[in-house]
Image (cartoon, rainbow, N blue to C red; front, side, top):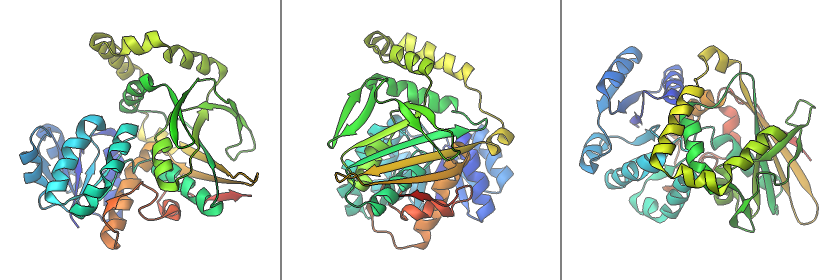
Length: 355
């Protein structure tokens, strides 16, 4: 299979390129800027293509001989539709690294189109949501009649969000804090159900509700009707979340000038950690499933830094698709190769299962 990585000059793409080289996987690097893409391709010994996403004809011309597109160019609410329309026309498989819930929902609803076109489509194959979706699927396999899943993650070390992820989070704020209850999306207070979780070090830490894509992807993959996502949040952070959850802030965020001002603030505040710092960072994922009989199962998973993993995950899945007979259609990240596949990716450990 021929793989094309679009948005190759991005922060996360650097880790994908490195991992592909380590695994002996050939990529064609692509993006809008020849000044950025050409030297990157020459440095890594890959071919390259230059095109933007404004013309469907231009996209089709550049991917018509490609078997699978890896879209690393966000925000995906702008790039997904343009790229996926071309992939449908050229019958090209598609993976991306979005964490945007609306994109996952759109892809899910287009499942019949993908099957008829004979293509595999899976959004959110990076840290958001490959490891968490895999934990959800593992929980479902261990407790088939589960009616509730709780997921959470914790960052250890010096890893942090990139500016791009923080900007995506800003756009997500107007939706508020969300959970899935009885199969429906429900908005809750930032103070909803704060409690403690032990991520594996024997030191329980306070967590708060965190709007994460698994309330969509986890629901599509497991069909469990109640899904909640959490992350460590102090009382001070929860108070700040209340401010951002206010109607006043949401209205202000809709005004272009103020929104752009906030974006510039984020770009100045969020400096991408060095590669060395990311190597010292790790992610701890917690999952718990319950059923109506009071039974419970817990699954924990440790991975490398989220951005390093976000580069490796899509490359590993693309390679899996190239070597296995995967039926066309929509997939969540954990469905493509099954929940245990995540533990075979460099930087991920084995599941810890507690019953």
